[in-house]
Image 1 (cartoon, rainbow, N blue to C red):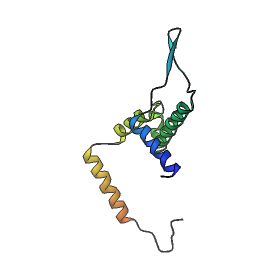
Image 2 (cartoon, helix red, strand yellow; image 1 turned 180 degrees about the vertical axis):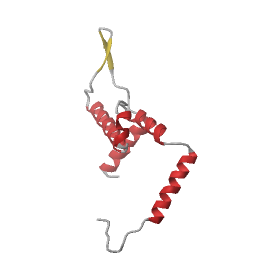
Image 3 (tube, rainbow, N blue to C red; image 1 turned 90 degrees about the horizontal axis):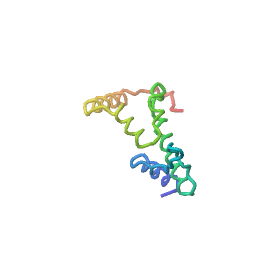
Image 4 (cartoon, helix red, strand yellow; image 1 turned 60 degrees about the vertical axis):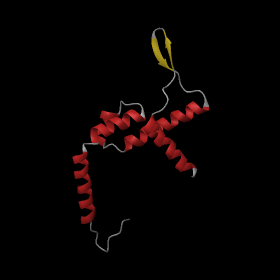
Length: 114
């Protein structure tokens, strides 16, 4: 497995399993997040940011604000699935529609995909 594939596997694991909770401390009765300091903590934070960013790219622009406040990738994926996943009947309808669009796709010989 090359490094890019390994990196994508790591990102998908963060999305599926979540990331470790950030370290916090209480100062004057207020809980504050301690920024990552070790190399491993920084790498985990980068993976979390990349996973969240990857998920946000798949959300249509008109829905971006609705999901923008969700800060971790696992919660974001759950919210996306809840909003766009639908039930079994909806998914079947979507699959049939996509299949129909694929079957009806036509491009003249003079046209290229470029």
